[in-house]
Image (cartoon, rainbow, N blue to C red; front, side, top):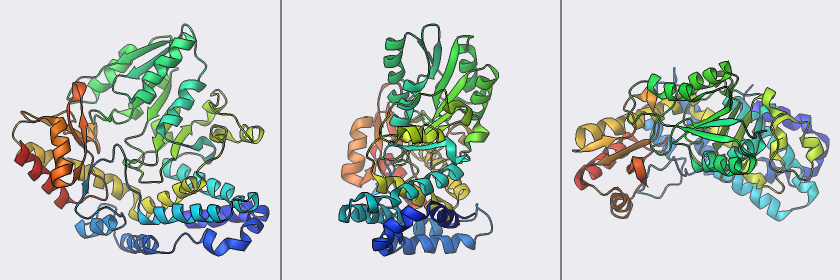
Length: 438
């Protein structure tokens, strides 16, 4: 069933109250497909229908995709690990629904937003290879991580194993909880510049003990760009009776992810990064068998109904930006218009080209990110001998309109994260600029 067909079905199911409540403004509330963004989405869909395989897409196609984003002319944005723009079709949906609520914030008018949230959750579940009852749309990765950190039953004698490259919301947050509850946090280090999956898996296996309750790790590190073999780690954990949590902030929307195939108990992500979705929306996947054992962080109005609705009990968050929540489904539609496999391969191709051209064209370059695409994905972190990375980060934007990030500590360097709104010409230009600065 297509996304649009599924939406029509859901609207028919919710029926009654929702339909009648939306009648006075149905033309404006439900269209969501007018304007430039809608036309560009239709153009992309028409082109992809004519492509024989997901691999076939030339630079003309990706320039069409780029036109869906309202990027400032001349700007080369390679900062997807932090914040991405949304395509025009998603912007239009957010703006339209926000205006609709601002025109009429009555209970009657807003009743339809519950159906839109169901719509978005169904679309997101299909996108992630999950059951709809396993998906909660929360605020961001940090909120999703906090739900697991605060929701597991842990105490003295229990142990949580973490990767030492985790984001603070999946690292420091565990320390704070452990200080209160008395369990142990154990961190795992992996070798710099890894060359095989085995050297990434082995430290985790060595860390597991009979006390280990959970292993939690970033799918792709935001500080080094290293991609962990997630399915292998989750399988090893399950074999030992250990639960697993994947922080997917750097893979949700960038990498083909099937949470059932990965075998994890929890997966988290933010819509505002690689997913190119609305701000203030995030993903929490909880495996069906793990839902009952995970306590919610927030309990509010509607709790009795939410607690019996699977992972929806983790959405009991009070007043939401319902326009953003609804637009999650529109973002899935945008990805499906391009093709999930095609977008996945494009990110790999852009990152691969960036690494290859930096290696061949910039003297003194050193990569924190593996060159092997099996051990990395869209995040590229490197430093150049003799080049101050923080100063270079500033100059890249101020002098050349190139947006990236500066990294410090053990992974000092420049981080560039190209995405589907970038072109190969832009990759070449970025490398030329860095070479001139070296």
